Image (tube, rainbow over all chains, first blue to last red; front, side, top):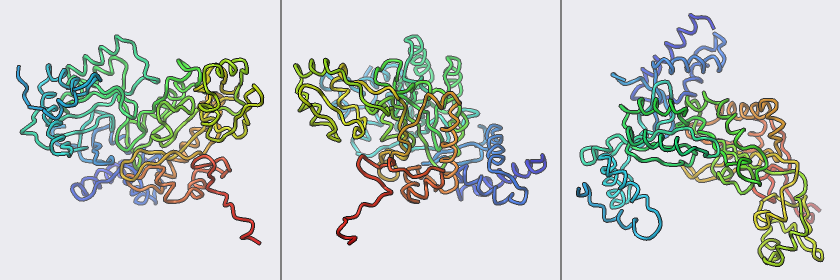
Amino acid sequence: MTDETKKRLEDKIIGTIKEYTGKKRFKPIDIVKEMEKEFSGDGLSKAEIKGTLKEIMDGGKLVYGYAGGSYLAIPEEGN
Amino acid sequence: MGKKHETPLLDELKKGKWVSFVREIERAAEKSERTEDLLGQVEQSYRDKVTHWKHGGMAGVKGYGAGMVGRFTEFPDKYPGVKECHSMRINQVSGFFYNSDVLRKIAGIAEKHGGGLLNLHGSTGDIQILGLRQDEAEEAFQAYAELGFDLGGGGSDLRTPSCCLGQARCEFANYDTLKICYDLTQAYQDEMHRPLFNYKFKFKFSGCANDCVASASRSDMAFIGTWKDSIKINQDEVKNYVKKLNVQKYVIDKCPTKCMWFEEDNLVIDDPNCVKCMHCINEMPKALRPGDEKGASILLGAKAPLVTGPRMGMMFIPFYDVLEDSKNNYEWLKQLISNIWDFWDEYGVTRERIGELMQRVGVVTFLEGIGLEPIPEMVDHPRSNPFIKFEDEEEND
């Protein structure tokens, strides 16, 4: 995966979660599947998408919430 | 000092000689105002016959997607001490071995940062620190990390693997439960701390069919110790048991497959029909022992009643040579786990456990998906088989 593709993937993941905040809760595997479709032309593997998501989570740009199952969320201000 | 909340219903649960969780919470409440409010809220729940906890939300420590369980009271004005009352799951030591010094330190941290209450151990196995607020979680976690502990699983991830005390203490253990539990915990740190699954997934390791960690009923992937060859019989000891125990009534008649009997004074076991349930060995441990070819059976799909009803695990691998595979860093097992998780990723729906997925798509489809060939030993319960249909001969004529 090139740096440019990785940046687009990161932006798309975070952008999707932002866009759907309050409307839909994405569990991590859902977003991985969404990105597989979205980036099918770039030939990204599921493992690469999972790896990028892991980096996003480790960087704190998204956080995990829990409501019956785990979902991805934008961190609250101040956290 | 008077009680902050009147608790007549909880007080009923202190009566009698047996230890009481109410008494323990009251002891903790002597030092912790938040735990006083916990008593008030629990009393109200008993009175109203409903829980007043809000479950989930955002609670955690930096860098981890799991390991803290969010709890918030529905009545923050009435019970401000439990406005936030989160649990922190600490990965327990395999087999639950601790030295007393570490236990004191674990308790000390729980008193300093939480409500002074511990749960040893949750059904997953973890040490649970109860009554934390989000703003003190990081400091509490760092204190546990300095002791050498890490967070356990939580949310839609691999829950903290747990095991019985195995060969460290038990003569019946058929494989080293402590080692495989430790090794797989190390191998799957990412899966434990970053929820990426449809729902939770549990490994539990029991050294024999006594199943001291309830793996057959509580874990998506259960490892239950067993053996391939014959039960070892010491006929002299059998005769000693006959002198003090009604062996016919309490052992032979209770054998689930009726595979044992006496021929004159000697006990005979039809080993191919034995299901290794451990009953006879438990009753006459000096006379009977597991065989020499030891390993584990692997069952898939058990779960507790959450979301849909409970399920027992179904036998998929009748004999897994744990020791041999451990020499190859569990290569065979890890491939099987990877196949199961990939299939679940692809076809599972939100909050669907692996057992429910098997039930929904059918065992044959599930087997194709995970790359296993069907064999007659894959049974839901003894004497059943999902692949072979027996028909009355007369109906076919």
